[in-house]
Amino acid sequence: MPAPSIAKALLSVADAAPDDYLDVDDGQAAVAAAELVALGFGYGKLQDVSPDVRRLVRTLGPNEELRVLALRALPRILDLENSELAGLWEDDEDFEPAIRDLIARLTEAG
Image 1 (cartoon, rainbow, N blue to C red):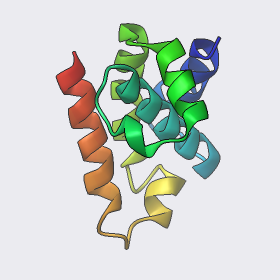
Image 2 (cartoon, rainbow, N blue to C red; image 1 turned 30 degrees about the horizontal axis):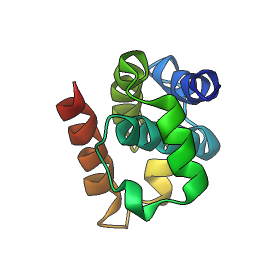
Image 3 (cartoon, rainbow, N blue to C red; image 1 turned 45 degrees about the vertical axis):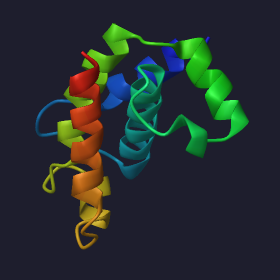
């Protein structure tokens, strides 16, 4: 069952204290989990992912609880002061728009 592992990845970021520094591994896992959640709602390019990911997304399906968790987690990942992932991608002009696009897709899914 994929939902518990996806929830765990999202909770590690969403439930971190506001001043906790988010490790890159936690940030990457949360972004990947959020993308799976968006795909589960049909918001994303399912044709661009592997057959294994498509099977996982079909098993997951739309999950409102995970969508809400993802929307709590993603803004934390953009915080330059407290997110290693944001710091590593600070000079990449595509990073923030990609995360904001994911937030928009998850918002629209609700």
